[in-house]
Image (cartoon, rainbow, N blue to C red; front, side, top):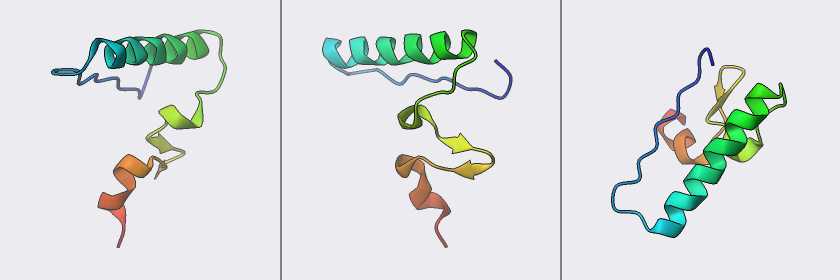
Length: 61
């Protein structure tokens, strides 16, 4: 997967949250292997622009 990064930070999370992370990673990998686009909720950067609300605050001017 060129230009992709998956870094799960799950220290101290609940088992339910870890299960949700695992399902999300499985979905991302399945979509990649089936040549389908990722869901918007998983995107951080799209076409060179930050699209995730979790990260966009750092890039506002």
